[in-house]
Amino acid sequence: MKNKITGLLVIVLISACAAPKDIDKSNVKPLPESFGNTTAAQTGAFVPITLTTYFNDPELIALFEKVVQANPDYQILQQRVQIANAHLKQSKRAMLPTVDALVNASGTKFGKYTMEGVGNFDTNLSANIEENQKIRTDITPNYFIGVQTSWEVDIWGRLRNKKKAAKERYLASFEGFRLVRNQLFTDVADLYYELIALDKKMIIYEENYAVQQKAFEIILAERSAGKSTELAVQQFGAQTKKLLAEIEQLKLDIIATEKALLTLTGEYGGTISRGGNFITNHLQILNQTMDVDSVIHQRPDVAESYYELLATNADARSARAAFFPKLQIGGGIGMNAFSMQTFFNPGSLAWQILGGLTAPVFNQGQLKRDYFISKRNQEIAFYSYQKNVTSAFNELSLLLTQVGVYQDILKIKAEEVAYLDRAVSVSNDLYLTGYANYLEIINSQKHKLQAELDYVDYQQRNARTLITLYKALGGEME
Image 1: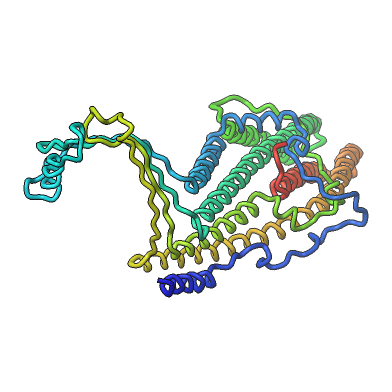
Image 2 (image 1 turned 60 degrees about the vertical axis):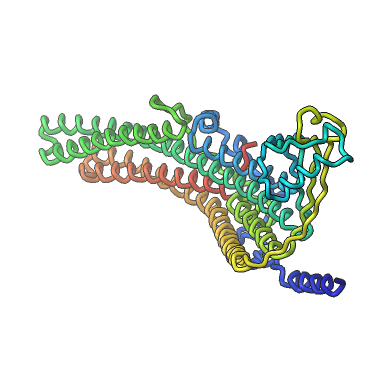
């Protein structure tokens, strides 16, 4: 007997040596110490950003609140988090003993030539039993009311690792919720600032249309006086109609963008209330000292894949523990009798304690497949995590660079618009004094219009960069 126990221990120890190794952050390619965009002046450590402080437009914040309350995608995500939490609670209960109430009643007719039938008949003839202990031989009843319990002693950590896997997947589901939530918020912000850009372009077009219309009327008057040609009239008229058509197209674009926003907020119709300015530039972010590893892991996409990696580590350990023997302890207690007259007699109290050690024998192949699959899932989770870390670093590095570059571009484009605004004024003066022709006026107005539209486009691109930066930095609601 001693040799058998020793052999079993040797097998267990050998198996334990083959337990899977965890794959964690230390296996990832080391991150650089900075994002490569540091400026000369560092104003302090990086402060995590929040939704209400980053997007400081009351109208936009109101849209975010509508998304939280009414967007179906947001509500679906919340339900998925609740499902993951239910799995976590279930895994916790699996480590506790099960306790079941049992009520059982049966009647058995034993054959005359069976051990039970002969035994019951013989028992009734015994002088050692009382009258109420005699057994009915036509139909023998059996009544039981009590509780029974069973508990798997988690020696090798199979259940413990299942619980850990469920916990990590709950955390991963919450990070997935954050990821899609932030994506919803950035989609709303992107459409909101697109509306502001369209509003600004509408103002530009309407101002240019008014100027063009006035110039057209002047050309008509000059043609009547013989100071201008029919060609000039046609050129100015065509340019005026072109502006009018583009104004109508802008109106359609505004309606389409509003409808897209209303869909995200779960509304059937209406208009979107909005401000008139783009998002502020948050240049202070560039001057903060960032711990690369900390900032990267604040992102929900990276955190989600990291928690999934930890969950697959636990899955692999749980699958390995399934090879080891399982120790089950159980028991029961209750009232058991073969007649209702004696059922509540103290002598009817019955109890049982049992224990058993089971080891897999014929299902080794299935266990090996489960273990193989868990190891492959562990590798997949690691590569996904490595991919997200690399993508997050490069995205953040690019965005932080763009934030600074767009400031220079916007300054240059503002100066360009100012130059062309003066050029239009000069071309009008030269035309009136005969030093410029109508084509120079048209060209100067075209150049000014395009420069103004380009300036709005760059403002919108800058806004999109800052919106994406919020998501890339793992922005929180509060």
